[in-house]
Amino acid sequence: MITKSLKTNEIANYRLSIAPMMDCTDRHFRVLMRQITKKSLLYTEMIVAQALHYNKNRNKLLDFDEIEHPISIQLGGDNPNLLAEAAQMAEDWGYDEINLNIGCPSPKVKSGNFGAYLMGKPKTVANCIEKMKKSCNIPITVKHRLGIDSLDSDDYLMQFVDSCSLAGADRFIVHARKAWLNGLNPKENRTIPPLQYERVEKLKNNRPGLTIELNGGINTVNDCIKALEVFDGAMVGRAVYSHPFLWTKIDSVIYGEKEENLSRSKIIKKVIPFAQKHLENKGRLWQISKHIINLIENIPNAKRFRQELSENSQTKEADISILKKIAQQLEDAGH
Ligand SMILES: Cc1cc2nc3c(=O)[nH]c(=O)nc-3n(C[C@H](O)[C@H](O)[C@H](O)COP(=O)(O)O)c2cc1C
Image 1 (cartoon, rainbow, N blue to C red):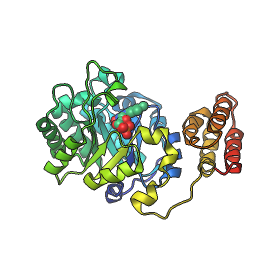
Image 2 (image 1 turned 60 degrees about the horizontal axis):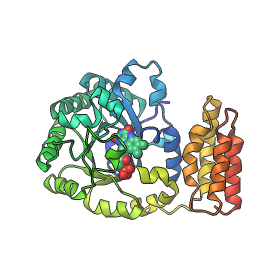
Image 3 (image 1 turned 180 degrees about the vertical axis):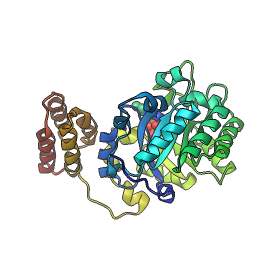
Image 4 (image 1 turned 120 degrees about the vertical axis):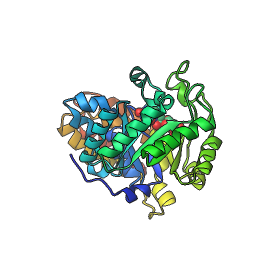
């Protein structure tokens, strides 16, 4: 479905975002998160520009629901023309902004030499950003690391950011650790190189006019509040994915919205109409339940509820009654 993009100044108000994560931040997870926070910016998983160019099924890659706004599409690639084409498609499809992935060191990006590898090629990155800016009218943002391998000094980081900014990048999301392209796998690259918030702070202090968000190791709403004292935005990944219910106060605490009394059962009930539509379109229930399961923790019998949802959702025949039953059981138990 093509939906209408928000205006650029509306996007700038979103100070908290949920990080792009392959195999996690699909449209089902995003719909779940929208029941928890109406205000935060959501990201897609990375979509490779080549895939949008060649895949006849590109509508499926691009599709999202109206309620997912504000939503940023994350693109991967190093070909300026393909990225420009993808940016235009994303704008036409109704995305609110486009994020270029320069932080991910997965095997997929290694074979294409993009993602974090592009931190070593600032000219190519600038060229990509320039072409993307020319092809659309929505913000282009960059998600990157502190550095890669030996290209890891503060000066190099600043030159990289300056070059992106000159090319037209509207915002920077800095994963506050470097990546080792040889020797560490993607998972290790998210844990072993130490977090260095002070280096992102230095960047912000040296470039106060740029919009700079902090990412990496933000685990609680309080961590976000602290980050927002220094940075223009905070991006959270794993802590939100694994513990979505711990984030139900974001809108009231961060955005000053009236507090909504959300419960696990209420959230699941709100997801049910979307799940129903997904099943009618020949989707599987498990594609949705696998995210919902993470909601069910920190309550008595959590393990039993999770087990029941997991076992009953994974069959081909699993239908909406499974979600309805779990929601009801949780409500009856006061959750
Ligand atoms: C399973 C998984 C998949 C990820 N996929 C992407 C991705 O597609 N693009 C990207 O820029 N970062 C990706 N990341 C990195 C996150 O966006 C984020 O930068 C990283 O997890 C650090 O933030 P956190 O400590 O809040 O999780 C992924 C992380 C995880 C755990």
